[in-house]
Amino acid sequence: MAEKIIMMADARAPALAVPDTLETPTGLLADALGRPLHDLRISVTDRCNFRCVYCMPKEVFDKDYAYLPHAALLNFEEIARVARLFVAHGVEKIRLTGGEPLLRKNLERLVEQLRAIETPSGRPLDLTLTTNGSLLARKAQMLKDAGLDRVTVSLDAIDDAVFKRMNDVDFAVADVLAGIDAAHAAGLGPIKVNMVVKGGMNDDQILPMARHFKGTPAILRFIEYMDVGASNGWNMTEVVPSGEVVRRISAEMPLEPIGANYAGETAQRWRYVDGGGEVGMISSVTQAFCHDCSRIRLSTEGKLYTCLFATHGHDLRELLRAGRTDEEMQTAIARLWRARDDRYSETRTVNTAGLSLRAESAQKIEMSYIGG
Ligand code: SAM
Ligand code: SF4
Ligand code: SF4
Image (cartoon, helix red, strand yellow):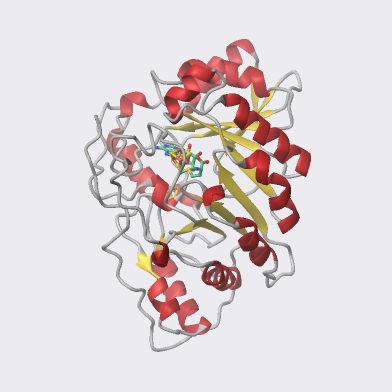
């Protein structure tokens, strides 16, 4: 049973320091390990209508849970301003996430504001969203009309009973599938479907999920269960390595590896030998991809995290609300990125090396707070 953790917001976030000498963004920032800054993930809410057992277990995220008050949240103008600062620094891809991002009221207004951002190269921003799919059937067309390019939908099982055990709020598979269909009809493709595999909980769904999505336009991706946050009581024995997932699928439907679309792609790509399409493996635990991680995360309340496993964020909201100029904030961001040397998953892989270990989790931030 997970321990009760009360901290959701990150109280340990110092304001970002603004250096005396200001600089203009070049779009060519590199961190301490030479990694560029290309990808911004924005969490728009810390709330969710699901209670996935590996993310927001009911015992922790109950009616007494202290979610962020509305005034603490960045408003859409603040989010769009931050996004513009990052685009000037070289960000080409923005993903909206949460909690459940479609719970944020009028999210399509934010999508419109983000769509209007011009990149230095003139190339359009890649604008995507990760959702549990529960509200997608209703909102897909609106999101497309506002300028969203694509969606990723999380679905952990195709069997209703297993899915309901995973989401823990009795939500039916058919409603998520209706959301995927609506997204497809609206042109929000190629749609990716993410399945977190938790050993002993839904690994019997690997083959049924593969069979269901084979030959459809959706690309199914299997995610290794990660030791994010402090609530899920992660244990290495519950991780099903991607190599095992490939082996199980291949035994029935042979797969062959294919090359990455771009450097820094999180999923390893495989395709069915018979032409039935493609699947992806996100091996965050067994084959860390920190070496080309170009992602930064903005929390719902305006804190920046240079790694999913960071123990504290850097407060940008304070600068926003103190009336700092774009140049001041861009200089502060540049300094933060240059100092970045995070490579948690690589060091965790070395530490655990296949052993059965409980993660050192006490200080880590929740996935539902920072987004995936
Ligand atoms: N609520 C939305 C959803 O579920 O798609 C967006 C936020 S959710 C935190 C983003 C992604 O993180 C989901 O695909 C979810 O399955 C994944 N996730 C959450 N906890 C995880 C964990 N411990 N290990 C691996 N993936 C996890
Ligand atoms: Fe909600 Fe997504 Fe976390 Fe599930 S994974 S509890 S849908 S935020
Ligand atoms: Fe990037 Fe941190 Fe994940 Fe490594 S552990 S891939 S640095 S977010």
